[in-house]
Image (cartoon, rainbow, N blue to C red):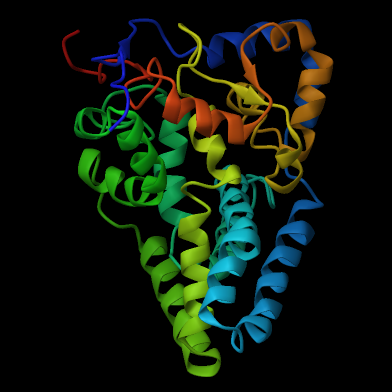
Length: 321
């Protein structure tokens, strides 16, 4: 089973999440950052190109062997689908068409969702914005592992399987920890996705559907691009709850690695987050950061001081501390 993790509980804190206060300090010193707020006019073209690439791949995959289908799903299709999930992340912040056009953002989210195979665009937004506002809240922030996860996956082998099963936890954890009634747009998202999946199976066959959905799931688990799930908030250095990654995979993930910058300024499009760091380097250069998502996955699995417990938590609002 491997070495047991050294932590037996989460890291509890009674301070506010750090990003609002740092945002205030940065804007006082560098008010020009406000000029970066707003939508990214290039984003819709990049994300659309990814969707069209996956649609073109339907014609390539349908005649391949199952071995090639899974290889393509892991090495190519899953990477694009993961990028499209992060496009949905940008859309959740209304960075495709701006806050003045919320429905345009939602509709574009439906479009970017199509190759992923599973309806997630609207549901993701519903929970993700709360992750920003209530970071670390033991109930509201569903990005946090549960006690059951932390207790079950507490060895080297256990953490390996936990990483592999990340997509299942991301899908079902919110429904268990903080269930919410479905919104009308979630139902619309589901109907559109089901119709697209039906058309794909009807005209291209099940191999293509497997390529899309399995690629999405594989690229959320033991996969280099999925390293950001762990790098973002797992406590690799005591007392620090958000970490940025400044490696090359940012090029295909809308700069999601600039995670401190993103939490400080969620209104800044991913393409412009490096500019935040360039303007205010003294706020980011001297805090712990990552340079490799693959190394993050390796260290998380093998280092007994890191595991599902290595998250900073806060008592839920309204509960006694």
